[in-house]
Length: 441
Image 1: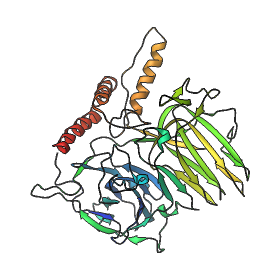
Image 2 (image 1 turned 180 degrees about the horizontal axis):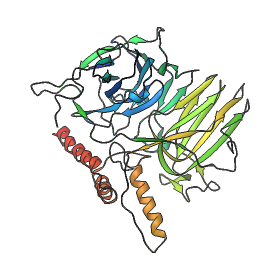
Image 3 (image 1 turned 90 degrees about the horizontal axis):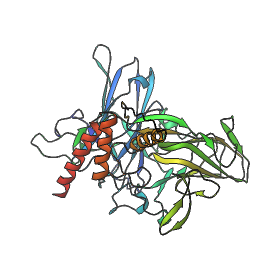
Image 4 (image 1 turned 30 degrees about the vertical axis):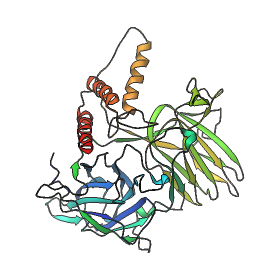
């Protein structure tokens, strides 16, 4: 594993000006350039700690996969299909997790992610090449004109003690702003955009020394992302029956509960119009549950909404007037969601919510048949469980911990071998445990 010379050599880590002593952890970066003709543009990209990449307002990818002190992974992705003649905008959202020792509780990330005190920053290398091999545009950080601004429209909140042990990091509080996504598609000349500051070289040391974040190319495929809809509303409500939006009257409170049909992982998406002074709380739940007895919530049939209620972790949205689009930065795990809406002096248009399902792109090649019908359900449940526990690492459970424990991982690896023959995530898991031993040395 070469940690010296990589595809990102000659690139700079860029971040905030040293005078920007912000306590915020979500930073927007952008680069704007003009194309007289289309080019082939492949980029290598990484971030401290997470990023989402957009090209001309279209989602391209997110990452990087989780590493450790010895491995900062970078992704390689072609963005050629998103380019156009004229002005092009590459936008990168960077989320930084402060270490618990140095950060506020509500700025802490998930415990499955290695953190540091280097602050929010990212690195990208990319040269647009025409069909004759000429470099037409260079968007490399440290060379191109990258700017940033501090996103003050998102706050973070760690679930309280009533939720028990939830070590997957803070959930979001969104404060809407009309046309808040325009920065991903348009040039920005206002004063809130500042020149990005060069932080570190990405190059490894030629004599074997380690850089602050030793770069390694991603060894597993990118996660898949598929837009999905909810199967139905619960409690016999019909807010979205045969229509894609509903009107919530002014000075009202409503609750909408929705079912995906099965436990899933996805980025929750919400679209509102003219929702000024309203509040929307979205709760994610595995199932309907009851009161706490001996530290555990009582559970029955998962969709029993007659005897139980929905309880779980939540994101909160405060839309503005005009058009608002919200999407969670990190994926959420749920089968059911509860949307609690409170309007004040104006009515709100709420579009039917959806989500972007995500996970490791496991290709199932095995099949199973039995004369007993119940085994089919067992097989389907087993495959769904495996898929929900495969991301950039194997995880023990997607809702609560998302940790790669050794014995859970061994069982998941063996099942992966049997149903697909895919060894890539297994190999990374073995390397993860190896580098953990180096950290403990």
